[in-house]
Amino acid sequence: MNKLTSGVFASLFAIGMIGVANAGESKGAYINVAAGQSQFASSATTPTFQDNPQSFALSLGYQMSSSWAIEAGYVDLGNPTDLGVQMKCNATVLSAVKSWNISDTSEDSNFSILVKVGIAQTKTTNDIATPTSYKKRGAAFGIGGNYDVDENWSIRVEADSFDTGSDVFGRVPVYLIGMGYKF
Image (cartoon, rainbow, N blue to C red; front, top):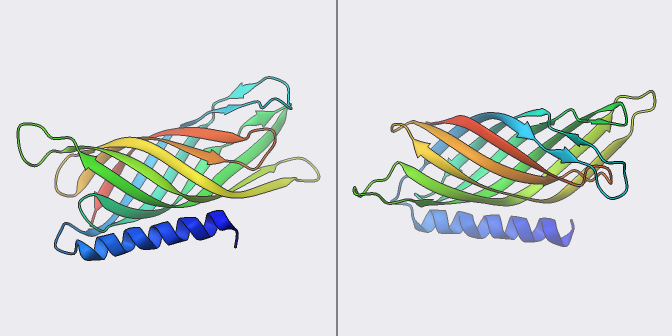
């Protein structure tokens, strides 16, 4: 296990302990489903191209307190094309999520901003006769906003970033909008 993986898991454990300390606050499991677009662009080592395939994400989370959660998810980064070769790219991710309510005139605000930090395992493969696959474990992070429609339903907008492990694509941003349901 490398130092980055150990550091992320230690951080997530510490965040979990904060959640246990705040046991009187709002807690519960939730699910988010989102769709959007990733933004692949060439690196310095390949010819210039830009491809913006459709993406989708599914994440399961547990709200440990009103401001801390932990999420595990799957993100389909899309199927970019490089030099006529169709690629497939996806990631599994484990993240800590910190959120801040944006106060308005009432005490309970429906708007919040969030920051995600975690670790992702990305996989990029191609569809040629002898498939090539790149796997990369690295840092994943994101920022976003959340609007609570009611007690259970929410709308989330976010921008996440994943390292594909490929010299061709490098780090790929993903822009998503989705719905969440808190159980």
